Amino acid sequence: MELTPLRRASSGAVLGGVCAGLARRWQVDPTVLRIAMVLLALLGGLGIAFYVGALLLVPKDGSTDFPLYRLAPFTRSWSPAAAIGAVVGLGVLITVVVGSWLPFGVAPIVGLGFLWYFGFHRRRHPSRPDADPQSADAVASPAVPAGSPGAPAPSIGREPETDFERAAAAWRERVAQEREVSASALYAPSPLNDPTPVQGSIDPRPVPPAVPYWTPPVARTRRNRPRWLWPAVLCLTGGGLATLAVLAAFGIAVPGLAYVAVVLGALGLGLVVAAFTGRPRGLLPLTVVAGIATIAMLVPMPHPGRVGSESFSYSTMAQLPSTEQNYAAGEVTIDLRDLDVTDTRTVRYSQGAGTLGLTLPRTGNVIVDWSIGAGDYKGPDAARDGIDLKGSYQRILSPGAPVLTVVLHAGVGEVTVS
Image 1: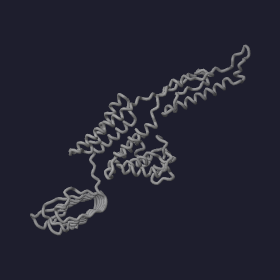
Image 2: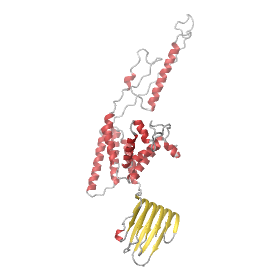
Image 3: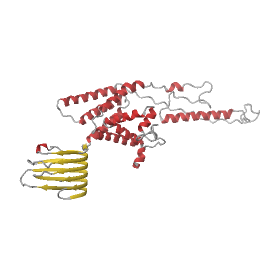
Image 4: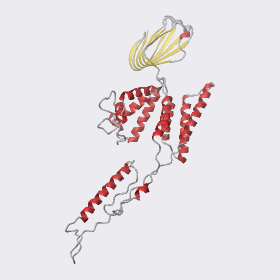
């Protein structure tokens, strides 16, 4: 199902041909679009979500199928609407996950989007008045009566927009051509249709069959789209967000989900009002996106943690971290050899992928509880490798003295204790 004439460019592509295809269609420099895509990627990961969605939904030159059907064969039985919905959900998930790593949120791009739509797009593309479908239907050719062979088909007074209207226009043109051919064949001078038949003979001219005139469908009237509803929804959203900001300024803890809930509530109220007054463009898709974002925030997700190689050294108990330290990937080294264990404490370190190394204090009681999802462990007591490994190493030099407990976890990688 071909939903758009947009194609990813096969020539001049740097990564997937998305920016080159857009530049070819808009007649702009592809370098400008690539820079804009990088900037969008920094704004909450929107550029990454858009590019991945284009790679999955926009075919390359010479193709008409979704690339998603080829990359994931189990989606070939899905309808285009289901495929688009799945890709939109994936884009929201990418924005939520990647956006937590970036310094900028989605608020700047949302503000620029509203500014572009109401300040630029609406000024260049004002709403057209409703076309009168009967004004053009009443015009008929003065030479040929309406309904007779060869009469031109009526026009609905505007360009066809939907697939049904285009098919109807093509059918009317075909009917008009058939009537012209039939009329020329019936009334052309020939021995069979001579206008002066022989006296006393039967008129050999064939009688044209009675073909009922096909009436084109009535043009679909445009629904009323109130212009005041969008400003009302924006004012309601701004008022709710401002209230939450004031509460946060007075020291009241406001969760991040509350901001998304305010936006979703304002859009939902706008949809309720639109059911009676008419729905403006863009209100329903934006409400769906806000709903997906709210659901994504309700799902608990682990913090991605830091990435890279880091090394820490502690010599006093006060320097030890009081909360669990999370690292996404890299090499983390914890040096406790100069630490004096003076009280009982528990410290936790978690590594997603990479190497997690611990150097034990020279003196004092120490307990190390370690676990690995997939990888290997090397310690003073043993060396193991495999999947779902767990173990504990204890060094009690002075029974009854304070004990330092270190909890180490690695998802994929290596845990070293020395």
